[in-house]
Length: 469
Image (cartoon, rainbow, N blue to C red):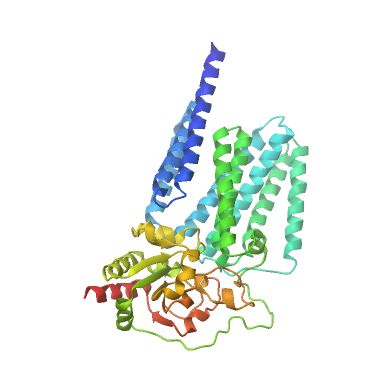
């Protein structure tokens, strides 16, 4: 009878895990479209809630006190962080979430290693991978958070012998992993030492993994760290023999890798080039690549309004500057006024615009901009010369003509939004300062470009007032 009860419980738990996994997959499918993304997030979250509840009931827990305390503390921190966070700080919050996922997996693997008895080599390999990937994800995500929040400098940090140091570090980690497997079942001080040594090396590898990467590559790094957090969770699932954790971690890991590949293709670069090239670093090549000569043509609000009023087609190109100025709502209002005036309005979204994947999509969705008017660079570049006005709001690197004109530029070959081919381009910036990648932009000196200096939100709001006035 006891065997029958245990069997029935196991069947119910595994069937529930299958249902939760189906919700994960269905939610992930819904996330592929902006129109269904919110519903997809809710479906996936429901699947995870179901999985957590059935796991707690399956473990025959006698006292839920500390579990409830932990849930309340974590939920409170998450809730207040979510409602207080500014939209400009969303990329660094995502980086922290990746890091927390990594450290959680590391703690699970560490606890199983220290508490286990007569662990087989396959389980020890899973523990080792959980600790290694979790540690790399945690420290790497903290460095990414620091760069995105500008707590530390966003420039890549390069040094001589960097690859040699990384190779030695990987060699030590491999040796430590073999030592962990060899020492299975030995509950001595050496067990704590080897685990601490692996954690220390994993943290150091995470730091050295991210510090050489420049600010413009942060969207790729965020996607890759997200994948790492999923792989760490997947390995943790093998450690504690939890099927739904294996499935969820594998889904996050695979989707993160796919997104990383998409981001790399959008920059026309390989992942190895992103990770090891130090994009944006200043190198002594004998070429003054940042020296851009030309005449800047400022424009005021009144003249900008007159040109926009006569335009029949307008393309808006948002960038991180729009996020900083919190101008998305004003931009939507301006777009609606332009449409009411008879202009066709589109929003061109570059895959790596902003500081995380989908950053501009999140901003425009918050402002209730219709998904139908969002276009990708390959959709508008062929007809760019027919567009009357392009309005560039805080974007820099994704509209930089050097990507196709200057072979010495570090972004040469990266697909851009070719606003320099439009009849007129308005660039909204506070100053002539470079973007996050630290590269100057010859677009600002093109004959068809007019610079509208000032806070983006104030400038767009002034244009809105002109149309209403």
